[in-house]
Image 1: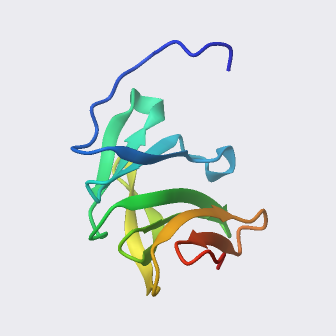
Image 2 (image 1 turned 120 degrees about the vertical axis):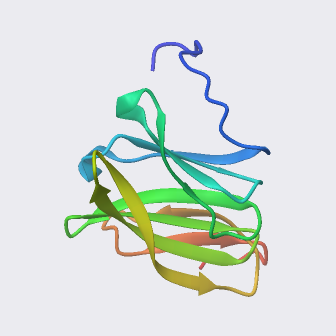
Length: 134
């Protein structure tokens, strides 16, 4: 990172973008996920001029965080938001790209604001509206 000059502009959402996440090198993918108040996640292929790979619309409210994780030879995406939901997805190769399919859905009793995946990729820590980390 040598400068903050604009290299590309992608009009991606109908509302404010709340989260951006690049896939990690160990995933073997070059993806950028953007999450927004419009309740959508767009998955862009950074290796193909940020072309749209997939739009995910499972959330029913603002999405506050999205993360990529790789373990056991699989690439996963985790997202959480104001709808109190956590979605777990797994990547599957399709044609010349990847598609994420939902593998698990958890609903909590509080809004979920931010999260991170711990280094072994086994656990996710989530910061919640009720001032707790889960």
